[in-house]
Image (cartoon, rainbow, N blue to C red; front, side):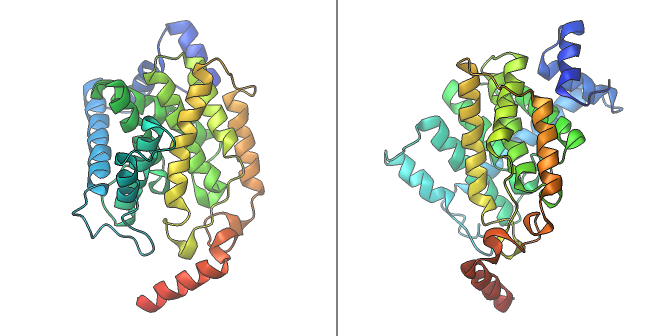
Length: 293
């Protein structure tokens, strides 16, 4: 099975009457020597790792969960949420909290799942775990959604990039938000077209976002951008499910993202030589880290 675009997938749907999960699974089978059971079990293990990272990041006893700049911020959000101070509502507040939690495990060199990258690893699990709790979804449904997210990410990787070093942060957090938006629509029983619309809007919302990591570390601004990615995914899914379509097709949005990424100067593509990475405070943080080492 050959898939390079959303258009290819929509054609398969018309000719074979398959949903996004089924197409993703068949794609994996046709491009590997593994059977469906093994492939699904492998994805199930990825979901377990995602959940474990969320739990670990929110464990108040894990005081060692620090990067070189940040640490223990998700637990502060959890405390605020549990005290009834949430502004965003339960699902979105949990999604951003879980996204931050996952990223803190990543910053501490713990085990996470790149989705699609380590620097964007909080968006998808944060979104799906929050949805699972709100809508009482079985793990099996979430695992299907992970296949859907992977399918969207694969198209982006083929047509553009998922690398901040190549396409800026739009290629990492933007892609992760796109994947999570499509997965959200899927678990809430939207159509295939709606999944791609949500994915398109999510990228549109982050088009042109640069990659400017302070001290070259995946902490600032990456950590909080994962929270933004999760919130973006949910709002895009909500708009689409309410009947607000993307005016630009997903494939064209991905092409636009590639064009924008190609135009970004090197200083805005993960080199820590532009954006906030060269601000006065950022350079002071970098100097402190260098001295500590």
